[in-house]
Image 1 (cartoon, one colour):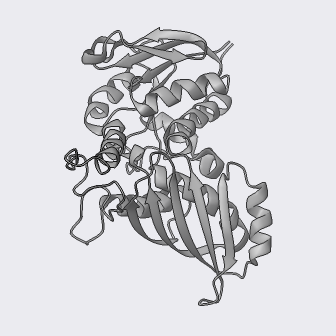
Image 2 (tube, rainbow, N blue to C red):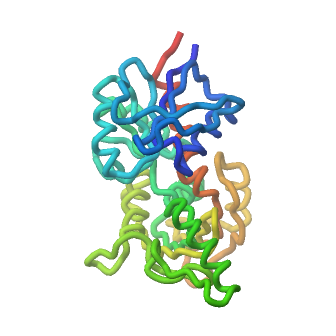
Length: 318
């Protein structure tokens, strides 16, 4: 027997990708519902070789459903996630709303799958920020070997992390720059994103860092190890999909770059990691370059992997 699964926000980039990955990975689904806001009611979305019509999130009854994958903003999640959880459906939430709640597990399955049992606290599991998820997958096996003391990371984040409107803005600005008189003014971003980089993701905090940078610090500590010191600089780049990170790591013990390469080659979930090399400016340091699809591992894939762990470890069917 399989599970009754709900995808909330099924018409968005991440929601569509969740449906694709559920089908691609043959997640055991007995019944599936695609939910969206009322303005998108009846929109058709794909699930494998099936076509689903979206249902109204506002009136949906989650009673009897097993798992709900949420891919909507924090404001809407604040309304509907507690409703689903109170009706017995386990929520896996992609927004930032619950990531820092000490009672709610923040999960990257390759890193801290054992924490998933804590979902029972509130019937909610949080999915981490896209930039954090790809980094901790790379850090975990190295941390197990040599204990990480400090991480300095600079991110190069694609516009799909902001959403479809940002992707449209990059596309239209790029076209407009080649046609005199058809330039497109920035609306999604504070500056033109086409042929530009913007060191500004999310709001600025009193500390001078952006909230995106703060998220990477707080989430890495919660997922991997609270003793690790992390500092981040997060930058938006004119790329449609895919986040890149330049990561500098200081360890307690020496780790040779060749051994690190062997470790990461065998590590579960490690995607595109290269430029692994010794940092000669500190006693026990490495540099590496890490790339991931932010719509997949940074969001939809990680959420589905959480659902798989939840099913295997906690929810028994049949």
